[in-house]
Image (cartoon, rainbow, N blue to C red):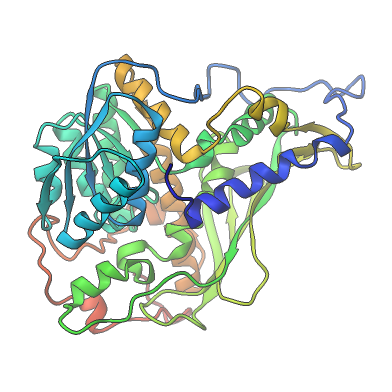
Length: 455
């Protein structure tokens, strides 16, 4: 019922591509040779596999709140309503009233009942939504504000969906990790917008990699190369802060730059397949060549080094007229997996392939991982079971921050260094901010590698 967004289009591309190859490629045993027995990377029960039914189980009625009523927030609200019966949105919050009205109008046009929602406007709207009596909240403001909204939700015992990235700087990532520990203690369910974790083709590949089908992981490549994203020219009457928020994907303080805001998906996939391991250092480069507004780069190329000499090459670009590629590859001692849904050995034999037609189309009606992540969230809430995705997404977000700073400075940045760094992009307390002046807009700084500074 909801429209397919740009994010959903790219999210489905790998899944559909994998299914299209099933009929033409022979499937071979993963144990073709006598001495080729699979050795699991981890035992079953040591890693999380979500139950991905078409819809959440019926249960108690849930009141939901939406904080951040832009396109992604509106889409996430539709996804939650699609995922479960017995969920009612009772409160919407945003800095701008027009965004709330537009979100309600769109959801109503798509056939969802959001009548009677309370509307809260301003930087403190997040507190008012959370305090209004909701059971679960969707956090989809520009990610600069996400850690503090999550922290408050946890303090009030409210379950949460956090869109990725969960933070844009080192302090924000630490804040999310600390809040996630409190959420665990309170047995809250927390799901993040790294939807590959709820995409059946990816989940099945993850299981087989953990079972040892590709052997020990030795490296990989991840990409998010596409054309330029949207931007907003400054309009008459907009303050610095209003322009930065309305044009948020182009300002590093708001989005973290696109290596954090968008490419975190691909970095996160590799870290997930690695069993949650984080890189120990990053070296890379990037540049700004075509961007119209903001202070971000247009491209990044980062070498992430993990323990035991494992290297991940990360590449992302947002420039029109260039080769596009949104994908991941994970390589092991026995073979490699690509996000087209295939595991191959190094002789080109197919060891396993996701069969979209038989594994998904024949068994399920709901294929959209943006909906399935909410199925998982609602199931955990109704069962009273704790679920923590915030910690792993904070780690993935911090890896993106580390890669960004490596490119901005031209230096090799270590994990311990970025984790401890006093890096805070928030220009004040989250609920006392105003739509006034913003230093990042008044005096934008485009990073110059080699000048000895770091954000």
